[in-house]
Amino acid sequence: MQSDLLTDLGAAMLAGSLTDEVLMAQTDKTPPVRLLPDANVVKVGGQSFIDRGRAAVFPLIDEIVANLPHHKMIIGTGAGTRARHAYSVGLDLGMPTGVLSVLGTFVSMQNARMLHYLLAKHGIPFIEPAQFAQLPLYLSERRAAVFFGMPPYTFWQENPTIGRIPPHRTDTGAYLVSEVFAARSMIFVKDEDGLYTADPKKDKHARFIPKATVAEIEAMDLDDVVVERAVLEMLKNAEHRRSVQVINGLKPGQLTRALNGEHVGTVITADENA
Amino acid sequence: MSDTVDGRHHVSSFLMRESLVDKHVLRSTETSVVRMLPNAHVIKLGGRSILDAGRGVVYPLVGVLAQMLTEHKLILGTGGGARTRHVFSVGLDLGMPTGVLAQLAAADALGNAHILGALLAPYGVVAIPPEMFGHLLPLFVHAVPGVIFNGVPPYSIWEHPPAIGRIPPHRTDAGCFLLAECFGCKTLTLIKDVDGLYDRDPKLGAGAELIREISAAELERRDLATLPFDRVLLRLLGTARLLRSFQIVNGHKPELVAAAVNGEHVGTVIHA
Image 1 (tube, each protein chain N blue to C red):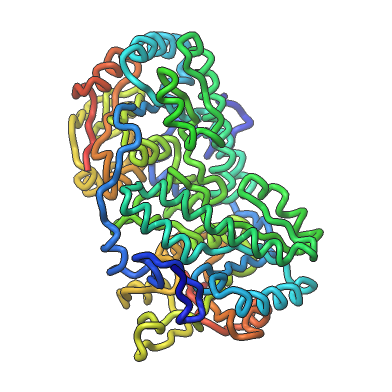
Image 2 (cartoon, rainbow over the protein chains, first blue to last red):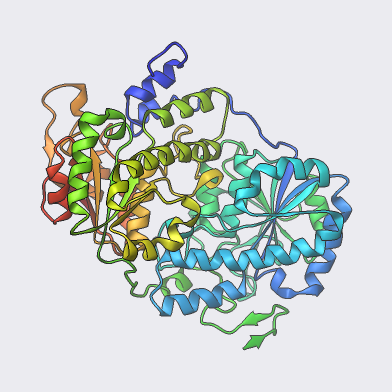
């Protein structure tokens, strides 16, 4: 297999170790290609949004439809309260994290199917992980697709450091879609304006944080954060999607403004340059 | 059952209305874990180190595995080897992101799984398609002496961007580790072409010293230039609940594989 067809790096990888950090540092020297640079990833919260039912979801669906002529959207869904129920039962019965991950996948899939049916008359498909190869076609033809936010790790989900809840859930899965496709934006639609110093539902003195770097958030050592901590970890290593925005989808027009590139919620960046 | 005081339709549970990011909530979720396949052993056969080495290495190892299958339930994972390095090389040159490289790599290891499956077919052991492997694994383990899968974890385009470079961090060692941990398997053995872990790469010169046993934390501290297994395993061991160690053995001495699965210390043991 040693041949002229291999790049120097290829020959080095064939002979060397993929654990060699000096060799690994050579592997991002070629310029990356941005696969879907004009698509936006929009993640709709489970507990924060879909569990609110029609009052919250219908106006958001209208806003998504109104934006179809202007923006391509890859729409991911959270899991929510049924996942919490499944996790509770599963924890009590001694289920490992990988099994809990399977359970979370099922709930975010239910939510994806419901959003999909609400968008069906606009020709927007629901895609499972195996169908992501068709995503570019659907975005070109219909300008949006719905997917379940849970990354498909199932039994291969890593254990968390604390407790047993899968650490990579729907925020992380949606974020990774935005990173791999080099999407134009990653927007998390929740029921709060963004990141606060504490959970604003439980602490009246919680202070809103409009913009923060990952390092700043880590330095605050918050008990609770508005996105999964794994998203912060992934942002640090990201090659493409170096910022995300968390917005309040209960406020009409916020999604539209965020899609237009405005800063309306909390923008979290990998560093000061992002 | 249902509760809507805050405008959200909740299902009653101890995690109801809770943030799954909150550290205090997460601490409350630490409970004992069941072992789904406590008698099964996971064995990873290196791609480049074993399968690419050809018949001189693979046939004797297959003979040992066939013998072991009469006593033990084996879950065999395969690496992708030289073809994965090649597709990484071409993919990187074409600017593919980490997630795409991970998606591509699954095919090479699956090819190797099918090669191993052809060799072990006389013993009732075949490669199972990844789509059904996880969910049907307990059925297979009880129905047949062993199964083969491509060791690749199903991260695909959801692979994590690594801290350094663009190569997927969760490769086939990680896939075998995560599977053994989730299913609570008895042992994890990584078959390579070295006697174990050395203080420096033994292929790059004489004088490297074999480390017989070491903790993941100590290994992190020593920060060796290369490791004979996916680096992410050190972090995974740190959070493992059921699989507290794994062993690296030399597949060019196939009798050691049988010894390792029998609980003997014949290579390098890395423990949590």
